[in-house]
Length: 508
Image (cartoon, rainbow, N blue to C red; front, side, top):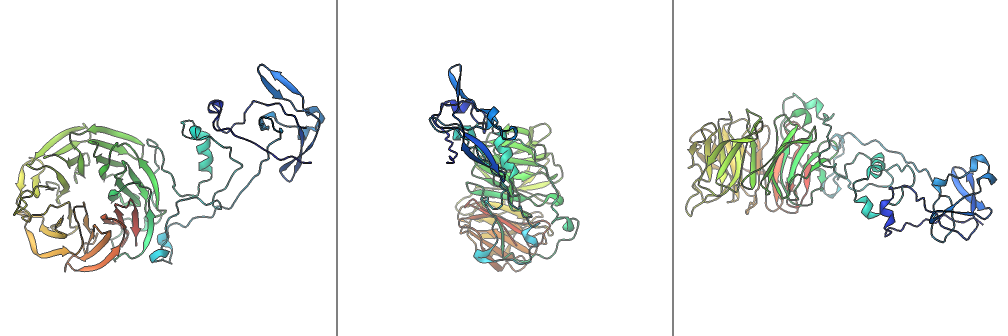
């Protein structure tokens, strides 16, 4: 009568931790039942009764020896493949080879002519289905304490062999990331941006962040503009493939507190990040290294690269000072001082000679120093009497074609200003209807300058006509506050949003 294979793994054994992962144990136990000889049938192993097995003692352990001379040469057992158990029958393991077809994924959901809407919108799967993963044999059980160790190269190799193209787990910090041009973006490189239409359908929903997402930004390099950068309160910032696959390409965990601000460098291969741990990190995503890591003397809430010199960036935060850093020397080259407590946002005006900062300085009747204009070279104030209403402005955005900029206000409206001195406010236009309610809600113009998009504290996205300031459409995007919405620089009508529900979404 055939006996079945029984293998027990004592995960609580202390001796197990010292053994190599996935390798069978060399310790044998004395058995009191007949040993079974091997028979093969169609690649599977069956067992039949044979003679009793003698026992040989080696030191303080006991080793089992098969009568190999009684078996044909092609049926002789390899000692390393024997699985043992205390006081049970000694049987050879049964291996199966299970394969499945790996269907090719489409290039991008954006190429699919059938676009679903509502609850039927195509969402990226998170878990791997067993039908999609080719299994290359039975995988040995690995105890939890060994899985959490550092020597898991064999286990990781087995996981990667069954990959289906979905990035379900981010790579470890410090690894290199190969940057490739998206085939879907290639035809748009160098072409003129088309007319922006209102996005209506959800393309990707990416939920890898475990905390609220503070900011998102498309890569400024056109050939790599399929990459989307996000910063979160979960102490990480991520790089996503937000055009082709809707998955996380890389997660960076260099901060010890919430990451409040991130910016792509103009070259598209470096990321500057700042957070509530007072640290500034410049990360080269192509080489997988950090160019520098500097401790600032205040928590950082705003970052901006200089538009003409990619080696210089400005940072502001919970301090009356705004600092300009040179990445080549890792030193502060300019300090801009104002009688405020916090800098909320930073924006360069066209030409790079002047920049604006929005602060938390307010008074009872007017918002003195709420928006300050600075001369970059001399660090002198140009004007601090730009906005005279008693609301702070959590974000600023400049128009891509006209000399104007907008400021998001905590009065639940967006104000329009001239970007030429003396930076007068346009009292005839006011974009209102959304809610801010103390959140750092962002606003932005479409690349053609015809639309103004703004998030809202109730999770909606509002689309305004820039000329008339009327609401064109409202999109229900997030369960909690939507703090950022940004159009793709090349692909018309492609919008990315993020919110305090920890999700990043792409709409078309």
